[in-house]
Length: 345
Image (cartoon, rainbow, N blue to C red; front, side, top):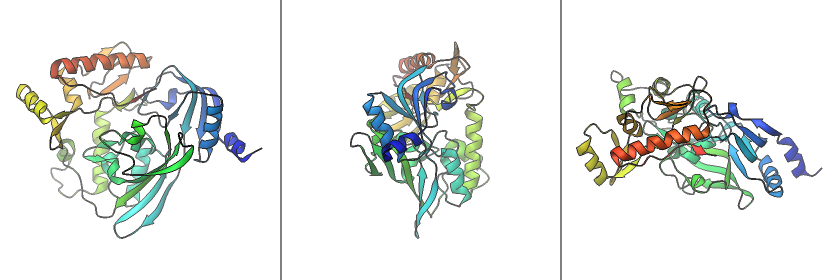
């Protein structure tokens, strides 16, 4: 048996694998053929098999930011690559390499347990480390791009592993080179640079309220506060299916913002660039009277209009139908287009 064949045998494969537990919406879904990737070296051999059989394919991590159909045809790569390792340290930064299958929240918790501060505002974001750069996850004034040194991935176009620097990744708001080049890169490792000089970030209103009487919170204080806020606002997928924030906060030119603020003085927004403002998508949806509304088996979460939920028995078609109704309502009232955040498979 060749070394390539050995790697394929090491990557466990399953036919008609049930993915209900691999997507946080809890949709009934099956993978026609699934490969469990536990080491990066398995990827080239698996991709050779997929290419030889001319199968459509996709990557599935923690399933927290996806909308799955009832059947995923072809091959599905389940990325379960583990590992967290400090690989460098100097006076200014600590460098940490993390396997793409590591749970994101558990990694954030690990950093604080080891006194590496900076990622605490990103606590409790569902998903894996490998998905973080693809979406350029962000929350409470922090984006993961600020801490990424490089991303290691298998380039399916060039059939080799590559190391992409932060600049190579072309990060933008909820966007990256990986997202712009779908089905090209399979992330295997993310390398983070964590600065040793730390400053608390509590400017966002929800966080600021938590520290009205504490002007010098620790990173662990902020971590706990973020967890408490997210737990209050976002439903536990184990109790009710959801993918967290369903729509991106829209970014509009200052001219459009100024027109909107005249008509809607209570409009919630945040600075983006000198010429743009970021609007709170949840507020826009709430103003359309949609919070808590239900459409069959799916609906808008009663405590946070930005979250769509599966009450049980819902499908991808149901959730996308609800999303279209919300997009139409917001566009009709505010002239603003909402973009769906989860990946649609």
